[in-house]
Image 1 (cartoon, rainbow, N blue to C red):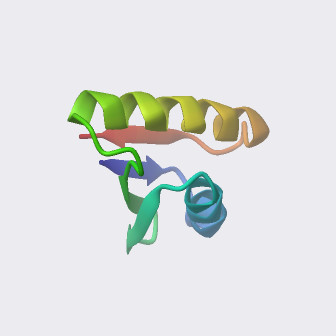
Image 2: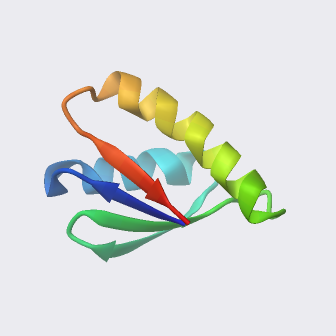
Image 3: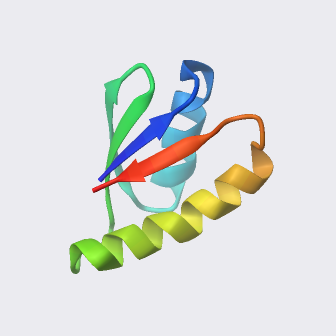
Amino acid sequence: MRIHLSTSHARDELARFLAAGGFDVDVHDATTLEVDSPHGGTPADTRRDLEVRLATWRAMHPDVSSRLDD
C-alpha cells in the first residue's frame, strides 16, 4: 500500500513511526511511502492495520494530510 503525504518534511517521521509499529516501510519518493503490514494477511487486513496506525499519527500531525492507496 502507498501513503501519499501533502509535504515531504513529514515523510521520514511517518516512516519511523510506522517502522516502530513493525510495518515494512520503503521510501517511494519525496512524499510517498510504500508500506506492508507485519501481520501479513489480506489487502483488507493491511489497510485496516494502516488506517488504525495512521489515525494516531494524523492526530499528532494535524498540519499534514495523508492518503492511503492500495
